[in-house]
Image (cartoon, rainbow, N blue to C red):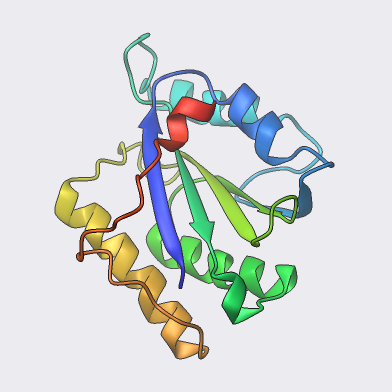
Length: 168
């Protein structure tokens, strides 16, 4: 049951990146289209500056997604990370991102921080409700492909949803 949630953020990404890459929480950290020997947040900013995008205070700078797996699936951190990488590769092929797999809770979960500005053409990521639903569908498709449970996110939940951005 991969639960896929996220939000667009207008703050600079440094704190969120520090949070997801914290060695006390993250068992695995990888990046795409970034130099691992340089500051990730600075690289996001350089891409945005190159295309003159996301420069204003109220501009969306990045997206923060959380990809959680049902403890009943007994997924390993490495497998959760691999499935999240597959999702990110399909969903964000033209954007820089960092994936961190956390094992500090009772369930394995992965965080994805995605630069809102494409390094290929400078276009900004924009997600309508239907676009966001397609990302959740992709998460379910990948989980089903590997024999993991899926989540019917279109069905109302009894559990109160939380806003990922409230924690950052």
